[in-house]
Image 1 (cartoon, rainbow, N blue to C red):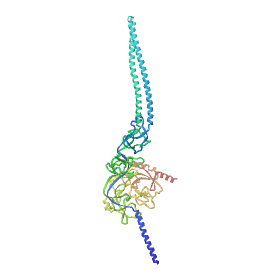
Image 2: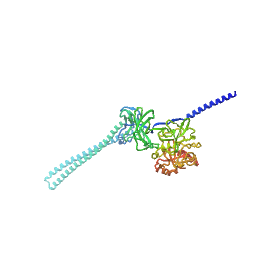
Image 3: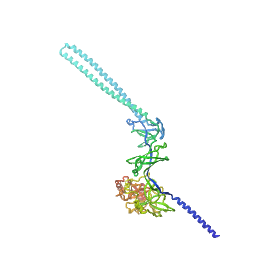
Image 4: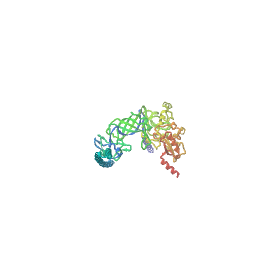
Length: 593
């Protein structure tokens, strides 16, 4: 009986063990998310976010010529809602008339004053000319009288006759002078009248122009369409906005929705890949199910810096091939520009590849075990890597490292395979030497937030360590490389200074960010001290120098900018963790107390 009881107990333990095995085995497998290596055409893409615009549109303009009336800006009092469909001649907007009304009153006053002056000038001219005419009449009578006296002195002594002749001559000369003076005075009065008339006419004309302009302060649609608010240098114009009257004075637009473009901005690192005529896949954020195609129609030759960003970007316009009435201007689009394709290659998601200083590897399932397999990576896009060697089609790869990743031995690629791909275990990149030099020349000279760089969900801190970090120091999450290969290391002395306490604050200069790793011994970094490389998600960030105060880096910062890193700036670290300058200042202040 006792033996039978023991047998039951052993059987129960055996059953529980089997159940536990299946449960834990299932849980462990459930955490091992795998994907298969694919083979086929690999697209090299640049993904950006854009905004939709109509390729062409009818502008709804305000009154033209207001600057000539010394009206340089006008407030929009009323504007119909954006997106409203209107018929030709329908009301669109009303502008503030207060300034033009004030100008009209001023000009009206000036016109009345000019009219008064004209009337006064007319009266003065009439009076002056009438006096001159009366004077001539009197002088004619005086001349006739003197001639009569001369005729009567024919029998007088010679002296009396001579005196009579002189008086007649004086009267004739006086009359002649009076006639000339009248002619000159007439022309003078006529000129004065013309001047006064011109002043009055000008004021009257200005008043009539303003009366005509003020009628145009109520704006109507020139044709049928959908009203879209226009944008100017100071933002979108809407109800309550103040609009400059210079130029064409556009209040709103009626876009042609049959032809739309997506205006986007591509980072300076990727702009060399984008060419006119390349095909684009387009998605609309507001309608995820809607898919469109398009092509690049223009690429800016000169870059620009967007507000609140250090990124240097280039404007790219993409023409959408299809028409859909549901698509509206100002909608956000996701643009995937296909810059190139590679046929008949193996590729897998970026999350499956782990990169260190010298090699890349994946975790491959081989039956019931997991193999830490070295791979050679090639080109990449936002989601996937080309795998040149180390795996085969349909191999199962883990998306996340297994729990025992530190204990797995690396299976290296045979030397003959490495030689075939012209890559040694110490190769830093998978690009040719000339391309490597081109890459470093295109390095962004400051840390840039790339909208087209995929982010891993399992990143630990802002600086992700790809090599194995000591368990005793979980904050060492970055791979830091020096310009001297002998000093490259991972672990507790990754900063090449084992005496640095994690509570100490050090300052460095961040000079470049790159999507592909570039050797710290590159000619581009020649002459710069304390070169360090940090792996930040899918980016490689490079710093120089190391000082206990930011002021001590001022000379080196100036030197870096003279060597082409014009956007370089100072960053702070607490141990291996990057912190803000404000936090660093606070920590130093607390330590000095």
